[in-house]
Image (spheres, rainbow, N blue to C red):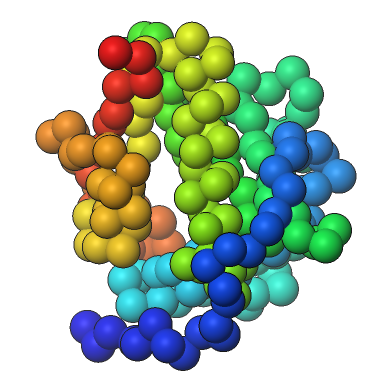
Length: 187
């Protein structure tokens, strides 16, 4: 696959200041927009294009998010905002795999493409890890596309390592090969 140079995206200084707060159901449309734009950018060379047009995907995701953003949900999403506009989000909570007792999971981390590399993703990720620690989890996991070298480097720089687990999932007629990363939250 041909790699696109990172220079194609708009330059953003490395110190973009953002406020991070707990997301609510009112953030569903903003989170859906970030998720679709971020997914399209991050996976442009790794996955086939999504079959739905961008606007339809955003509408579909907007309808899916409110239940996940309920105050009593075990999953928590946090939004990064700059000048009142949402520019990224992260979602974390108890691990989806019931065999991973006392284990937290980071389920999603997406940014608007214009702020990739600015430090906002790192701040959101650290916020999710701190939330999992505060909730008493000893270990945390996440799944990443095996071919997503950029994301894997991001997690490895944060001290996460592959733990040997793999899964293949089919979406939109394409099989995604994912590997699980893990870190200890308590020593």
